[in-house]
Image (cartoon, rainbow, N blue to C red; front, side, top):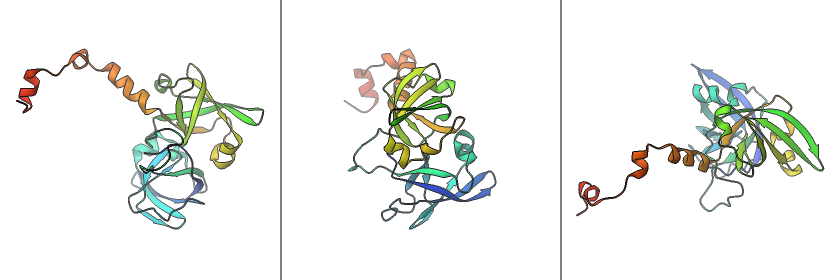
Length: 216
């Protein structure tokens, strides 16, 4: 799990294609690697990757063909900048919102405009994700926890304050940039609960159920 609060920006240092998968080396920039252990998760642009090798300023991860297909990882080249965040620890502050690092789809930046000292970004989400995006709700974009301002069909907008723009790769976005999107976990689970078969919704604990499961 992650929080969507970016700890550092890094870049893709090496890509080794391997039978449809990639082995990727990520240069970690200012990310503190002192407490990283083999097998730890480090998100790159919101994609949860497992460190199979690491050093003071890099880690290596396998990227599956599925990940390459459904995220922007397939667009990565040597030198591509990425937002980095180590996995959440139980004692950490939850400064953003709960993020799994499992990308739901790829959106596209449609418009960028300045508003005072901030910037407003219009993002077009894939149609299947639009129902999960709500005004004043949370969304994760390239690993960044953001608040949705408004939603119009498949297009939503977010306000980016100077600190977020300066400390993440969002400053490099232009119209047409593809971005990884992860919708709020609660929205996904709520939809699953609401779409469950009526028999499951109406199921209740009965004496027969308890007896069949070892309770006397």
